[in-house]
Amino acid sequence: MGEEWAKSVSLRFGLASGEIDVLLITRGHTAYDIWGHTLGVARRIVQEADPGCVRVSESTYALLTDVDGFEPCPPIETPAFGTIMTWSRSALERVTPDVSAGPKTRATSDGE
Image (cartoon, rainbow, N blue to C red; front, side, top):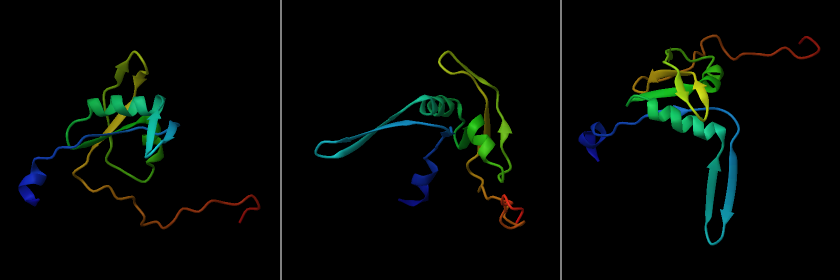
């Protein structure tokens, strides 16, 4: 499609982590219906995200222990979800976890 087509695309990402409800419908074809608090939060976050940015919820930010570059954003006040704390990062930069220290290991119950 060429470089000119790619320049005209602007994406925004809103991510939230947590539980969702999924309904599988299979009558002639397979369809999924997804809903729940987490999906509602992600939808609200993406509305506030700037073009070319990834904006994540507090629950998702807590999972990103090996990724730097996220900046705190102003809280999002909503009647349905209360105050949503978010962090943002440009999606134009490559996000690469720091693996220079090698894999993290966890001690077993017997101290190994």
